[in-house]
Length: 175
Image 1 (cartoon, rainbow, N blue to C red):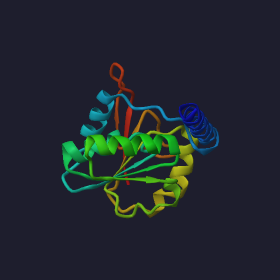
Image 2 (image 1 turned 45 degrees about the vertical axis):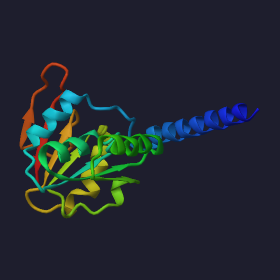
Image 3 (image 1 turned 120 degrees about the vertical axis):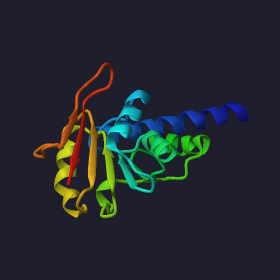
Image 4 (image 1 turned 30 degrees about the horizontal axis):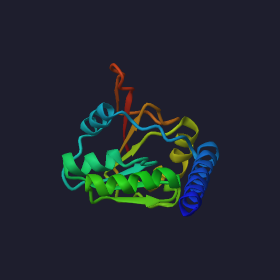
């Protein structure tokens, strides 16, 4: 009897999490699509991260950029994730991968990026356009924005790394 009740509670919680996740995907900015690990390492390498730099991942997903930026490059990493289900995955990964960076539940649109050295993003074009209009003005000079797959509308990249095999284009902007 108790096992049955616990099963119903578990299934109900999963349905609630997935429903919230679905609505966030539709109205909040985009779906959770994990970047392939080969692409993560390529993007981080192309970003030219130096030890101690402050990096932010907006729409951090499961935290893979944060983890490897910290582990492989010595960056100080912070990410933002608005989807509660994906945020939970990131927190679990943080425990297992033992990275010290921060993963914050909430929208990146209300955050201060004035101390950012590098910002990573993997967002759909409509979210990129909103990002460009609301966040860019507060960035310090020489801040890099590294976008995987999608270009920021109305902004010219300083470098474009072409698609190679299964790794999509990488757009690097220097503000």
